[in-house]
Image (cartoon, rainbow, N blue to C red; front, side, top):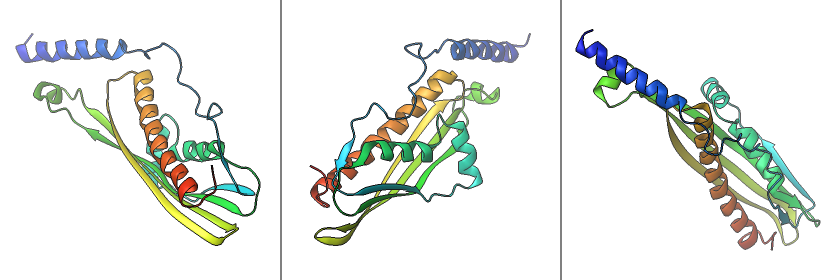
Length: 195
């Protein structure tokens, strides 16, 4: 066996074994993204609506199918679970303008790994954009605010399915926490609709 072929076979064998040896850290499936466990924020309006006006293109639709859960569905469910009307006048509208994911493939920087087409990465680029509008609230006719969050996550193409889903889930969770903090602060300090 030639030295280069032997080296390539050794690298391939070790990487396959490593990929199989990465189970989910707790050995349990990831939690379902229904957000029933979250404490909701009461909003002093008669109605809270969540509208998804984002239209995916082919690239984002394909990438969303590769992701742990489609970002637009996750974001819609999150907003519905997190913000609840507590009575009063008017309406709070959340309009999802974008909840996209793009996937890029990156080759390894390591010469041998690149030579045998191994050890590359998949990089997911997530974007959430939201338009929030309060209408017909006592004291004002309309107030609006736009929010956005972005996150990139790079995952080895040889990661186990469980590890891949865990990394994707964590990236989505961080984005939701960032945008949620901004929404809540706006509702409390600018719109004066939540305690």
